[in-house]
Amino acid sequence: MQASMRRFAEFSAAFFRAATLALLAGLPLAAPAQVSPLDGPVRFGILPLGGAFESRSDWDPLLAELSRAINRPVSVLSVNSYEALEQAIQRDEVDMAFLSGKMALDAVTQRRMKVVAQVVRHDGLPGYRALLLARKAPPFNSLKNLLDQPDRWRLARGEKQSVSGFIVPQLQLFLPNHIAMETRFRSEIVGTHQANALAVANNEADVATNNTADFERFKTRFPAETERLQVLWESDLIPHAQIVVRREYSPELRKRVQAFLVGYGRAKGPRGDAERLVLKSLHDLAGFVAADNSSLQPAAKLAYQLAKQNAMTAQWVNDAAREARLQRIESNYADQVAVLKDVSP
Image (cartoon, rainbow, N blue to C red; front, side):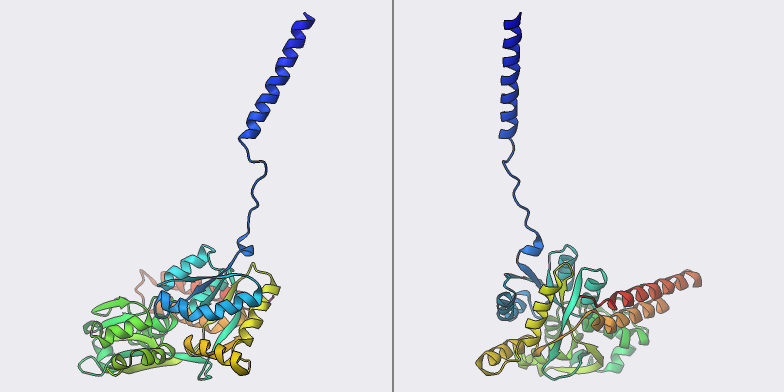
């Protein structure tokens, strides 16, 4: 009896050891360390200006210097559309970006990014202007004709997130003349400023939205096509684009990024000359100035004015529906202003 019990105990112990070893054999000895995205390369998103490759090659020299300044690798995300870049930001695939007002506004008010710097252009103006371009040859070369008969014209415009390619022309010119860009033209092309200007020059469209900064760049790259174009209209000044950084990054890293940008192109001698050539290739920039979220207040006001203008000109089932929409617009604008006042590190 005692011998039987002893054999059973030995069998049980052996079985337990074997089962334990088998279980352990199916598990890793130690879980692999999880690398936080904040510890990896800084992923820089580039707003598409000409094309994705062109934009990337223009930024590469500056980003290489930035990598050395912050002692972190910097990778580049260059896309073909505003929408693609916006989606990448929403998926937290972008840590730093060069963005125009509306996209920077969305990134900041959705509490994903913080503004660290703003662009300064070579002309020294505090902003740029939206343009409408048309061919010099009639019949589609008159602003009066455009406003009187938009349904005869083929439009080439920017995406709806583009301040100069859509928001400002819609707000300052078309809606006040009871024209909605999306519905009143004979046809439309949606593309970059460069592609849209080429479309008009090559008679694939009759009018294109653009801006003073991009059109200056276009003139140097496409002089023959520029000779066929004229400016029909220009807007009020629009604030320059911003550099935004992911808000989860430490204040110390954001300050290092800001210090690098503000100092870039300011030095004397060969190094400064080389940096200034890089800046000139980037939209004819003179450099950057320190900025915070409050620099986006003009962009918020533009978005608010456009939303309000759209609500006022739209057709509604009754006055109560229109009033409810206007109240939401006022509330959203107040929320955005409150967020933009947050300039803490």
